[in-house]
Length: 543
Image (cartoon, rainbow, N blue to C red):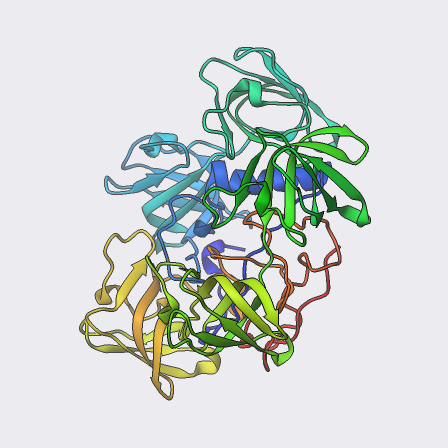
């Protein structure tokens, strides 16, 4: 199938907001490799070769839950360009050959390369190309995103002894690879400022970029190191001191003891300098370190994932910073959220959000403590504004204070009114404006409804170059698009689980920690986060 021809129904529904999953990983090879590929996407590759721009560095800041535009075409480089105004060919997923014509104004992006050019486009690389089609399977490239493929991914079997030594990896199907290092090999490890060869340890996952130097041998230009967690699960007892210990209920109910030292480091989203005292009963944790016995670990670092108190849709808004608001949560349960002067707020794209940004219809994730039946005092509130309408532009605006129409869900026509303060976002366009909204573009509009099928737009996300809606399943309201500010896979409602970005399920199954069916029955794609009338209930726990 040609990627540029992937289409989806015009979508004008208000997509159900799903919060991205933040959980941890069981230390088994398969899950480790999945984690490796995931972290590579965030640390090294930076974007999916198939247009998931939001998954890595370089993505513009976008309003919450705006979709990442699909490329005009994407695939694997079959022949490389010979000049900046030459051309190259790519083979798409469906085996179709496309010709990509370059010009002096074509821009290039490659994670880890400061100023890439046409010469960085090499046979075997994955690329995504934005531009205008000029004929059958041909495109004039405006921008080219280059994604170098790793030579090998696997688990470190033996560690290197020097910066010019080598190490071995156990790769797919148990194959043993030898990785040769050089003085120019670079290293990346999440949370490590200047990693080197000595950070490659037996049991770590490694992703190696470079060139094949023979059968099951690679010469490494760069190595991404992914340290495996020793244990992950739910805190059963909290530590009493920085050199004390705490227990974790892990996979299959096994109890692990985690011993702390003065050098143990802590990470918690939204907490500037977390310590052992932030590890609380009920929190999810991911522990890195060294196993010191059966179900015992000496912790080098601890990632803390505080559970949200409540997740749902704002029913009534707060009137002051020390007031309260109500949330419709799981099973239409009404929860009261009390604010204080120290409550903090987070909203993607808003510099200093406050209580006044909590609006009726927004989705919220509330952290804090229970103060009574269905009542919580909020320490922090994550606000997720819902788009007013999503669909295809039917008529374009003629001025910055004009309007345009959108063909939305079930061919419903919406009128979008613009103002001088409306902001615009379009991938690859530095300062988009109303004039970039063209007939046939897909748009996501944020703002306020001012009448039946009419919205006053505060911001408009444009997906142009004649592109269709982003590939399903997003287009049918089945999953949330990337990037996303918070968490998926949590049990919606009160007492859900909030592991941090980019992790898989911490203890793999059951409980409240994530599930393979995080949304439940599909409905018509317009239900609220809290499992409203159209959206269906949450899914079953994962395995």
